[in-house]
Length: 221
Ligand SMILES: Nc1ncnc2c1ncn2[C@@H]1O[C@H](COP(=O)(O)OP(=O)(O)OP(=O)(O)O)[C@@H](O)[C@H]1O
Ligand SMILES: [Mg+2]
Image (tube, rainbow, N blue to C red):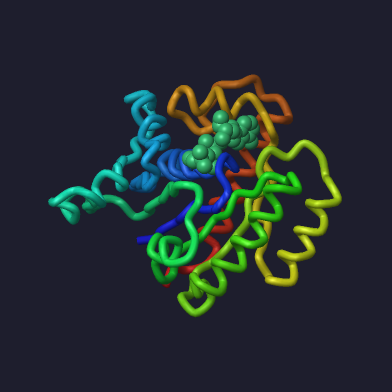
């Protein structure tokens, strides 16, 4: 079982977009996949409700509600066919609430939008993850996904130098594109949209292939 947590203290950086795209990409690859939504807004569960019945199946768990349920362990139960768990988290997690959301050996994916404000918050978040979250000692694998990239900015360049020093890879750079909105509305991943075979669509598909390749590149444990 591999657990992939999509997390950043910053709101609106693409956590749900990335969690739902990873989940649908795994499902398309024939994996049994569960999507856990810890956000009280329930955006990932909304996405799942739109998902066409004929699309490869993703098992949804409204983990936020389950946390407060008396039958908590039952509500959080992952079906036996599931081998990949993707976790969508709310914004604003820090300190022990952040630690609580993470388990040993997790793959931790941090979406970052290349604006100065987002980068600043994300740099602080990376420190929290390493210091309070004890990411290294708990053998987590951390990676950044640059999201909504329109152009290379000086702020982005200095952030990449900062990440380089921490040995944290940037595993994908996602375009800022209407396709992400289109896919989200239909409960799909961008790789599932039926589009003319233009270079941009190809670029999006390759980005998701790279994300899965990186996650799967090391044996679990
Ligand atoms: N690469 C992208 N291109 C275009 N739009 C995007 C992209 N990524 C995310 N969006 C849009 O940006 C908005 C915020 O994205 P998303 O909901 O995934 O962020 P979030 O981090 O989950 O937000 P929250 O903190 O509220 O949970 C959404 O409307 C989403 O469709
Ligand atoms: Mg979200």
